[in-house]
Length: 548
Image 1 (cartoon, rainbow, N blue to C red):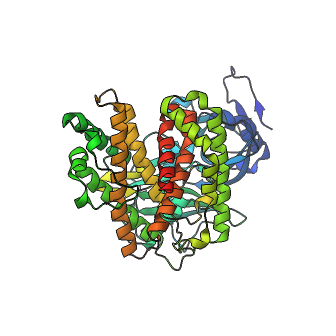
Image 2: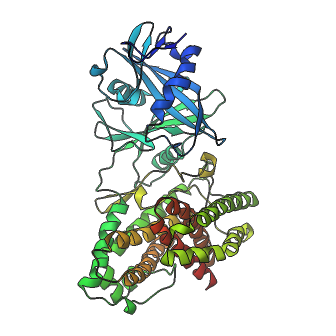
């Protein structure tokens, strides 16, 4: 039996008759751990994604043991059930450290406990160097000839085994916890996990071991948990550490700030800018001098380089004819039904959100929101108007959550990362083969955001009227898209990746851009209503293009 003792008594809050080594064979420990110990700890963690919901109960659904010469660590798979009738799974590695709290090398204490009279603390094992060292060495020493039964460590054949030297945390703890090993590799410990292989693990390993695409942090190794039912859960992913100067979002904001400053600095008249059609392919050497004077050449060269890396990623993801998980697929009725159901559900959700938040909007954002509601039937019909029988292109595995924040800048080049997929989607939906142009649309929406973010965050520094800033921004957006399209389409078609021809490309871009912009509405209305104008302008632009 375990018992809770008054907090003013100088002993552990939770006392157990079992040993630490046998803790997860002991029903009393499991019961107390899941009902009394864990909730207080987990609610405070940044990687916990259920803060907006009501926690009902926590259940331990599986566990594994990993031992060093000195200590035993337990890996615990927990299911958190919510009052709203859904659940989330998390993985926590646990360590028991005996002795006084002052001797611990971390503040990440889950609870004071005692096992068989031995007092100490339950700790998140990731914060214990011995555990981090053990995991690293297990990956490096892993062999296909000697597989672990429950927990599967793997090292890529592309990597020579090495010994543990050092480990440190990378940045703030977000949805995952990342550890830098030996200043050479980065290990991503997945906190919220799914009963399937993580798409990030699948895609990074595929691109590293079966393609020639090098602009990613290469796959080094992984940790997977084999469940009794035959499923495999990805717990950790180790990759090359890429030196970088920051992400492409930060880089683009710096570039765009200089671009918009040129309006005043060079006394540029925005109404003289030559406009172009949305998606019009634009070779850099044909950009009008007025636009080059405004934006400079470097911005367009970088957009072209990013388009090339995007195309190379898609060519690699659509290049395998043996591995069915990565073989290109034709459109069919099942895909069309899946797509329409998913988008109509999302669209209805966003309609409800905008109707409930109209009071937060003003000016042009309010007018565009009213227009959005007036045209809701048209937008719904657009989502339903996906005639798969007319699609001649192919679907492939894609990045799924592609934007400037998922791209690192280093040595005048771009490296693509974080292939986990769209956060709101289920793990099964993230693995559905989709048009590669959905990633392209995601990047275009990111360009749009970067332009408006520059205007919103710097409007006090610009003497140019906001109306002229918006007008210049919309024209610049079309030229950025035009340059991207020229490089991207030329490259993928040269390598025989079937994305369709002009009419189908434009239909898919309209479709995917509208999906992305409607998706963004919910976040902006709930988090920063002033920015709702960005997706609303995007929606208006796409609907205008559809009519032309």
